[in-house]
Length: 131
Image 1: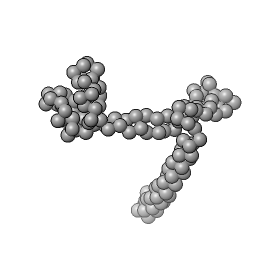
Image 2: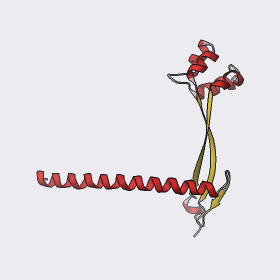
Image 3: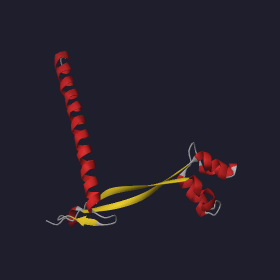
Image 4: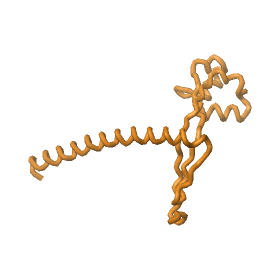
């Protein structure tokens, strides 16, 4: 491939990348607007089943994060080391709670929970698609 062809091809592909990024931004914005509208129409825990069997649900998940500084004050040094890396490790905290080595009430002040409302789509397997 000559340098001229290479430069022309690189320019074409670069322009494609820029065009696709612009499209992607527009699509993300429209998707966010459509999901917001659907969340307004579908009560939490309800669903719509499309003609082809695809299920669209409005779900809410609770995500917990932990205040590392406060956890350090609330737990013994050994227990704190067990449940943290550089930041608190939610799975390690759950293990310690399940095994009875941490009482949930003693660290509750360090928990930060956030409900995240989502649209979840379940596409049926090919052999279950209704036509």
